[in-house]
Amino acid sequence: MDGTFLPRPVESIKLREALWIIALSSLIVIALDAVTNSIDIHRNGWDFAYYIAMARDGFHADPLASPFAYRYISPLIVHGLTSLGLTIEQGFGLLAYLGAIGQLSGVYFFVRWLTGSRKGACLGLGVTALSLYNVKFLLFDIYRPDHLAYALILLQTYLAFKKNFAILLIVTLFASQVREFNIIPLVAYLFMTAPGEDGKTWVRQLVTSMIFLIPAILLPRILIPVSENFQLLSLSREGLMNVLLLPLIPSISLNFIFSTAAYFLPLFFLAGSGQIIEAYFKQPVPQRRYLTAYTVLVLLLSLYGGTDLFRFATFLFLPQIILIGEIGPRISIVQVIAVFAVVFIFNRIWMSIPDWDVDKYRDFYGGYSLRLNESLLRRAFELGGILIVGIGIRRLKFVPGKSEF
Image 1 (cartoon, helix red, strand yellow):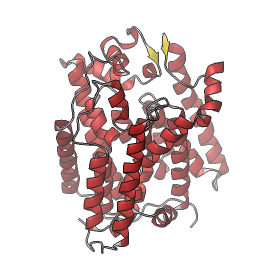
Image 2 (cartoon, one colour):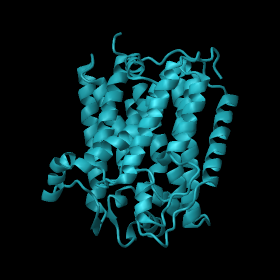
Image 3 (cartoon, helix red, strand yellow):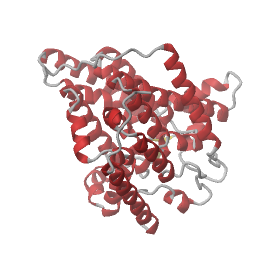
Image 4 (cartoon, one colour):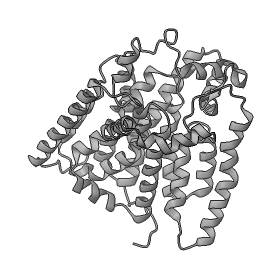
């Protein structure tokens, strides 16, 4: 293999198939919304308060706090929607629906394009839909900026695999104002293409990225007048100490491991380590380099991103859907039904998120910052039990269906 990524020759997605997937994604979002309560913005005073203030008053909101103020795209879109007669709640709700539908449809289209497998694409769509924090949580707390981030990461990765640097850079400059995680695809692309046969091109792209991306990151932090700071990392003495000490705190490390393992539950349930490694090495070399860089960077940003480790783990959806898409054709219908059932149960999809009690809210999923308690232990045992069931089903060696759906 010469190191050049070439997508596999697959049948193009027909208009009927695309419309069916968009309709299916819409129905899934509607169904999830029907079993999801809404966050009480009057009882609680969490992150959403800053996004609502920005949607109402723009950069004149008081107070503005970091890092929320630097994720201004979604609030400003809602600010614009209010001029069309929508309320702030309706604007965020519309964005939440469009973002969720775009994410789920995008997962299908991306995996289908990459692997050619309808079965793998449907599996990727299904497990992402049933991930608590990819869709359900963002229907519960519609005010967060993550709605657009996932769909943009899919678009950025598609552009990276197509080696369309110019458009990737443009999209990244926009997406970096949505969520910090959206910087990762461009960095992973540069890792994927380095050193490359054409070193001059790579150096030119690296320099161009720095010329445009560094101001895109720094200027909002210089120009937006924040009065409160909730970032763990900074150039202050305390921020630099956090870089060194966070990984050494046992409770942080345990919650980080749990959140990461729990997010990969669908992949670990469907495939053993040998199958996962085989699926990884089946990818072209550039694609493997991209996935490695992307995953490592997500893990680093997750560790240092704040208290909600379980929400940051959602950005691991990309390697998960690619690997599931690869092994999808070999997955039996029994495994398909089982994985949807266990992910539905583990992520408490049918339950209301208990925002009326802070402790119950933090224990609902588990893996919250420094919090170690009996609830997390039960969740860890539940995760382990589910994975044992997955091993048992795999050893029964059900024969996968021979036809794609």
